Amino acid sequence: MNPIPMVDLELQYRQLENEINPAIADVLAGTRFILGPNVTEFEQEAADYLGVKHALGCASGTDALHLALRAAGIGPGDEVITTPFTFIATAEAIAYCGATPVFVDIDARTFNVDPEAARAAITDRTRALLPVHLFGQPADMAALQVLAEEHGLLLIEDCAQSFGAAIDGRQTGSFGLAGCFSFFPSKNLGCYGDGGLITTSDDQLFETLWTLRNHGRKAGDYYHEMVGYNSRLDEIQAAILRVKLARIDQFNEQRRRVAQAYGRLLGDTELVMPYEDGIGRHVYHQFTMLVPEQRREALMQALRDESIASAVYYPTPLHQQPAFADLGVHDGLPVSEEVSKRCLSLPVFPEMTDEQIERVSDCLKRAL
Ligand SMILES: *Cc1c(COP(=O)(O)O)cnc(C)c1O
Image (tube, rainbow, N blue to C red):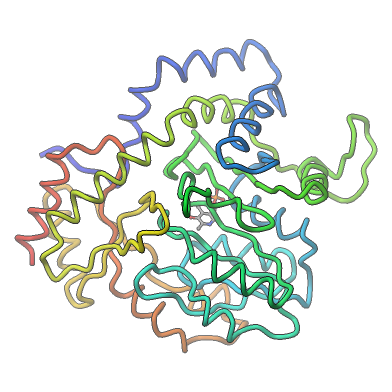
């Protein structure tokens, strides 16, 4: 039987190669490899799509988070409230600034940060809230915006998994002071290497970000306002992203179609399907269910036996990672701890066929 991967990047490339190959060839022939015309065009197209004033390419999603926090003035002694149920880069970026990540528990249904838990964790050192729109599901931005306003906190969004996700038609990445996107190949909008993007509608923050990403340079000459970074979106990657950005709505719609089909086929089993609150548009970067803890390994094995991929995002919440052991918060976030033991993600990608979806669902039903 043909394997079913978590995401089929080769198939997508085959469908787009007639546009992507010439776009890459143009960059090679034009030789403007660093901050060339494709980066500028892509930044404008992304800003228009996301409904923000500015979008700035950078080297990765991790850098997008780091630069946004730095530009917002986060530094030593500051606390940034975030979720422990995410990829480690969210919290690494806080640590890079010398600030302290403060992990608070998540909502058991959406897997996103619980605004009430965030409220309870605010101290006089808290400077910012850093929610993640996990798996493509928008976080509760209405509640988080109220919290940020009441306590004078900055709000910065980790949109690495949520390109195209929206709340009432408003895109993630347009709610906070800044939104941080990743173009890691498997993300909803992915390039063919590393890449990232920071959005903001704040002119001053944009200027600082623009300077920070390119060695602290202000204008074209060798005059450096501050010690910055080499963190630029690659011109070849920008050319690829322009081809894919034109199709992002279609890709996300197809991901939603896959999720709905899984819901129809698996909804009446003991598997807990992803929750949709009906307000946010979930773009299913991952299709993540809750399964009985004791059955997870057996279910994964049953899928593996039929050449079907599955994955655990994420098996260890960040407060239990050795990397953050010095924070001294090893337990006490029960929802995150339980969800990490029960979560299981199934293949989901735009090109997935009905037959593939049925094969995955049938296999799980038999294993149950
Ligand atoms: C992928 C990801 C990142 C990091 O992005 P990179 O481009 O790999 O550096 C950050 N946060 C979350 C939630 C992610 O999924």
